[in-house]
Image 1 (cartoon, rainbow, N blue to C red):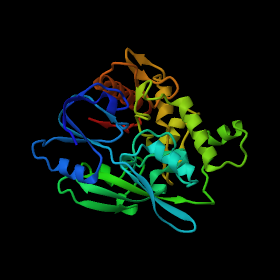
Image 2: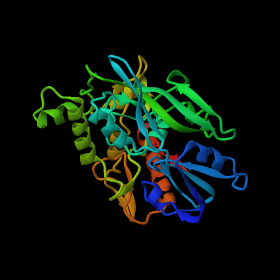
Image 3: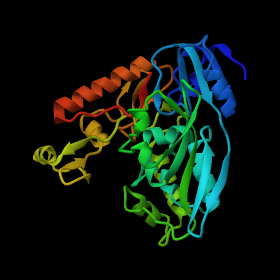
Amino acid sequence: MHIQQNFSLKPFNTFGINVNASHFVSVSTVSELKSVLSLKEYPKKLILGGGSNMLLTKDFNGLVIHINLKGIEVVNEDSDFVYVKAHAGENWHDFVLWCLSHNYGGVENLSLIPGNVGTAPIQNIGAYGVELKDVFHTCEAMHINTGEITSFTNAQCQFGYRHSIFKQEAKDQYIITQVTFKLTKHEHKLHINYGTIALELEQMHIKNPSIQDISKAVISIRESKLPNPKVIGNSGSFFKNPIVSKSLYQTLLQNFEDLPSYPVSETEVKIPAGWLIEKAGFKGKRFGDYGVHKNQALVLVNYGDATGNDILELSKLIQETIKRLFNVSIEAEVNII
């Protein structure tokens, strides 16, 4: 364990924003993490996972702690389910591929989502009709101030749409060190009716898809819409899909007959933020070294040397425009730091 000074965070955030941390350390064991958290000479600390859900807007004058805890193992199983524990520093997509290689079902629709396992519950990541909460069993998290480990059940995490207790009551209090997933061993529940998965499978000439087939379809769809962060800096979807009242949706339909929606409750629907942004004319729009991706309006991109503030100001412009045109508020999905 070595603390480095004046350390560039450019390789550690998927936007590729070039800001520096005054101090940086990577921890690979729980005991190292506890030791680093107890260092009094660094009152300001920033926890860094896969760097996929953050926008860095300035240098960080403190200690950045990179969570690099590794390991995947089966901890329990019965005739129908298997319980798989993955440590926080495991790359999420690599974990999905590991599950698929063992024919464990439940995470296939979540293929190719950027980030690490440890940050997945915070956001309750989701895609194509599946959310992390659907396969989450428990997680262990270290309290930042005391170093004590607490176990959280699915119910205790209070999962919601891109939301969990770690974004509200427990925000900035815990670091997730490992997550245990409950996955199917056979008779997998397939989700193919969300988005264009069914169409993609049809184009692949697959009539009876396996979980591996669904993963390949999801990967194909995502690669056709989303830029590779290693090529163009981005954090995936920058905004949440807004949930609005059915009455507002009906009002919007009077002017926008093709406005799609997904039911949430008897009184609310979810509408695609990407549709709103595209309708507002931002899709594919470039402002020097940053802009909105040409294939997916939800994705803000860094074409080279954009600053975090460049992208932040663009996101604010989009939010203001959507509010003015549609009377709908859209929230950022990424953390602004």
